[in-house]
Image (cartoon, rainbow, N blue to C red; front, side, top):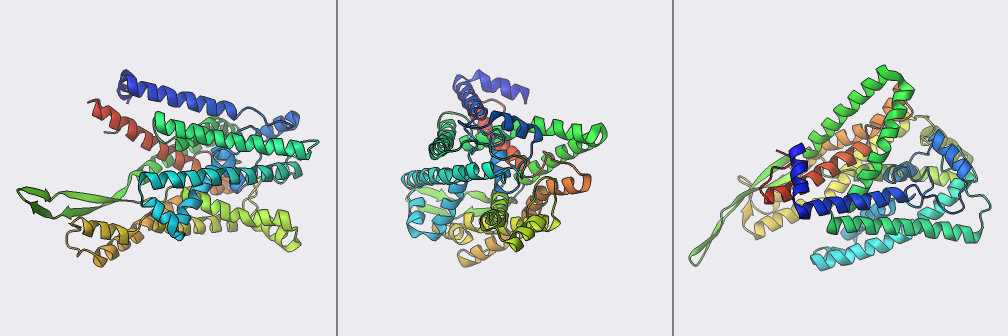
Length: 432
């Protein structure tokens, strides 16, 4: 691996791409420490010492922003509005025929969809920034740990803070696209990866200090085992063999090649966790707006997963929703009927399976069976932090859940891209 890193820096073009990527990440991390205008710095420092944030969607924002939310920084929203808008656009392409047609138009259609995603990102950033200001001032954002984070809040100051947060999200979106075009790897994924890595040492130190050396060593060993398991599941796939028939055109023979369809065990990635967290947070948000006694009591006892109060009903619902959304998102992203039609169009077939509908049914059967272990594993990884908090009275468990899934997925994808460029220049890659 060390020789692969050394070889990567020997190639001028690849070295420039890596240095450019690191420079953009440094700018991104700098913006995560610049406070918003009008924020109470004294209360903000007290909040950082308490390290107490609410569950649900705000915990994801804090995770994806590298704790910029608890620091009330310019990049407090992180890349979450862009992720949400991308998910919404993917779902709308299935529902709206015009977007589906754009998706099939190739590069020009994809550029149009990307433009719509940017517009929706700005709208969502405006709404989320306004919601963060209101909830931060009334104390519901940080589980009642702090109130009046923006003292002497006026309409003009509110507009300035909303504009700053929205501009910060737009700048992050631009930085991510710069990495994708001129750097190494997917820009948005690498920015999220950098945010999670930045918060990992502090979380590990806090875990060690709160549990002691004996338990801390066990938790770190468990965390490493989880990382290995995530790597194995992320790399696991079922390869469906595909044979293409030979065609003779004049004196030339076309086709006759053998290939395969890679069907991953975890086809949906981390999207089901985001969906499930967002859905479970809706009743919490409704209770803060409606102020109904029955709804507030139900949410506080069953869904309000804050300040170490672990609800096993919440954990069970979270696990079930993750399994449901794994199947749901996999069905959206992988259409067996389209795959079977494309294979038939180009003369491909699965050995022993007739082309057309039998191929589609076969792929659907394989997809249903292979998605189940992936969904169960995804749900187990997501609820493991809650189990650790409830069983061992640990405030935070940094080596599980969304963080590990994103870190492993992004690291593997980036290494594969660097490896492909090394192999083109006859160097050994990272993955052997």
